[in-house]
Length: 317
Image 1 (cartoon, one colour):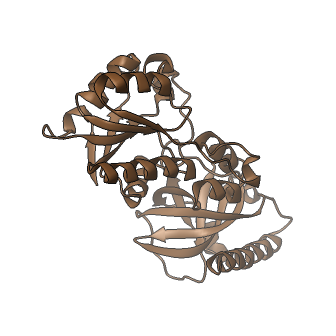
Image 2 (tube, helix red, strand yellow):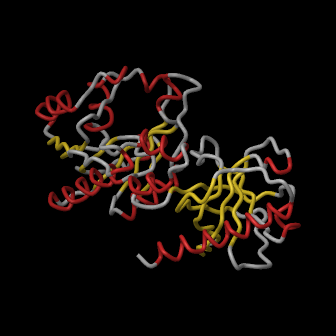
């Protein structure tokens, strides 16, 4: 998959293409429906498929300080899009100047002059241009003028976890930050992932016999609610079953919120300085303070046992 940052990176000889535009944070199942449709349509027309997205998130530019928690960094989104068959990813730097482009100017500058759109695929609630004034009806009008089709993909509603709401990044963020990682997994189609560099912490886990990887998460990461979770620790291509702790470590009067992963049944791991990923499969219990270190150790032992059971059950599905 080709990756471009800014309109100037698009090859000058780029021909017609099928385009879809959006933040696509998380590349959840609703996003996947749209992207797969655009890829399939591109194959039918014999042209490449292009996803257009933005950095930073538009809300941070339009309303500074309102940057939402991110479900996936751009490199992760690119990996997921490549798996769906996307031919090119265009990341547009979202600046104050760019935010002032009218919908008509956006169509000409991006879709017509640079990407030579033959078709544009979007969800029903797609908005674009200055003050989000453009919608799919306007896009269809522009398509008649500039010779491109517009196809709208209806998003399926979620199951029980989403209460019947359409798939959305907003709903997924709400589930993640509320600790409902199972519900988020239903919408994402995979476990929610957090990434970062392993840094040195207080090393209390090592002293207690459960050494953890203390993950310094990327900025604006959507981190699950405080508690213990079952999941995986991904290190250099290897997925290790893990018990994951999120919180301030109240047992030792901690104040800084951390994400720590204990790789189950693994010893002697030296992960400091490595970029790792943590997948959250299921909630085990909430954060708690215990009456003694012995009680804490008993709880951690139970956490590891329960995490192992949940992971094995998931692998057996």
